[in-house]
Amino acid sequence: FPSHDKDADVVMLGNLHPIVQTGVLNQMSQKPKLVVLDTMNFWMDCALPELLDVIKRVDVITINDEEAR
Image 1 (cartoon, rainbow, N blue to C red):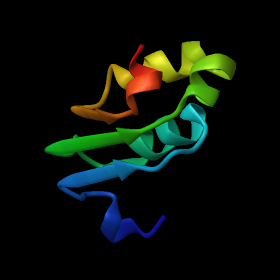
Image 2 (cartoon, rainbow, N blue to C red; image 1 turned 180 degrees about the vertical axis):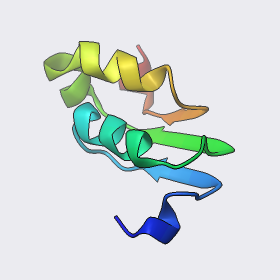
Image 3 (cartoon, rainbow, N blue to C red; image 1 turned 45 degrees about the horizontal axis):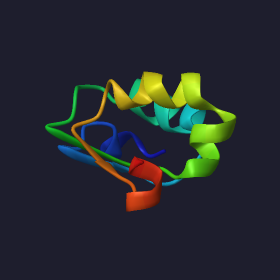
């Protein structure tokens, strides 16, 4: 992504494969002040280890009640 976005204060990680989300964070030139992660049960079922790795790096996670259970 554009170099001027690599120092953003806030990053919203859209509902993509957790490896892609981690890749975005790895490209940041500094740690953002706020990282928000959107995910769903598909990634919980198919890519849980990768999802858990990216969750460790975020401040806010958005999931629905079914996914939380």
